[in-house]
Image (tube, rainbow, N blue to C red; front, side, top):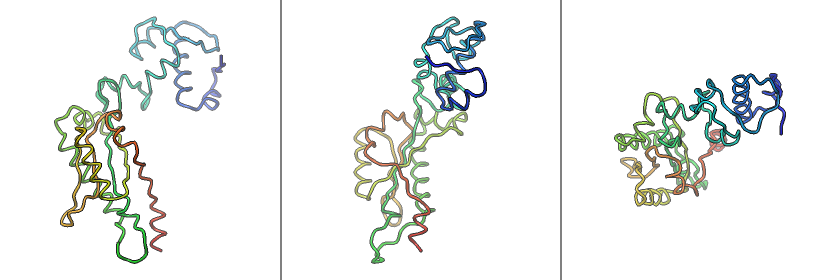
Length: 230
């Protein structure tokens, strides 16, 4: 059983989010019980004020690990409180996520024969914006999109940007998402009639991730692109 001192040194020693959560939770509980013991109990009985803050019945008992998994903190408020306020989470408190998938071959052009010109950064960003906006509009009446674009969630949106190797791979992914019933927008740039990217509607990660788990996060470096031009 670990000892957590009641001084500010604990913040330096236990800098991770979970340790800070556990320290705050048990400190409030000890104050409610009038317990001055510096040792952290394995299980905590919450007093009236602590229970009200975390949405628990007064006098309830909860293990620290179980509590940490259930009550994750976001910007200083428990996840359950934010869910109740409608801050971009569904009924099970799962974060809503919008995926944007870009074609890597638009900027990572291989070969020095001059037959292909890499797209500038601004053009690639514009393609992702087009697809994302269109996907939101196509799903504007869905419960998840309404929550995702709600006023309380405007500063808490979550997006993941992935990459595929080619247009063929992008079109195949679009077909796979359509067959699985996932709303999305495959952006076709005109007048070139070229598929450049796609974006999904905001959905719980657990519903979309299994279809996208083989694709990597887009980690293209702007510095690398600049050096290539030199």
